[in-house]
Picture 1 (cartoon, helix red, strand yellow):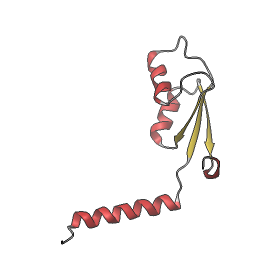
Picture 2 (cartoon, rainbow, N blue to C red):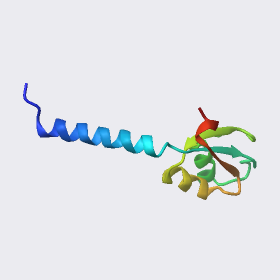
Picture 3 (cartoon, rainbow, N blue to C red):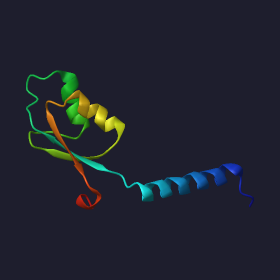
Picture 4 (cartoon, rainbow, N blue to C red):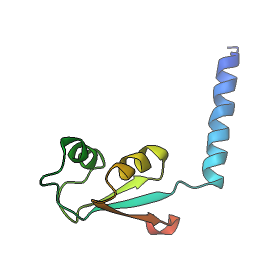
Length: 90
């Protein structure tokens, strides 16, 4: 069966992504809830829940991307963030 151009471009894109991942391994962030959510606005509580945090001192490992940093920047007074090196989360 003849390969279409879309299959070829998909293969090329897949290999480019694999090469990029090999060169630049994904960084990870450890996010820890350090302040109570009592009395906080609903939006802030929803952001904390979206990060996967529940109780004080709960931690979540998330990938280092702009979306996660946007969430963290909404609630910097409630959380601590630590960047993990590749060997720490393997």
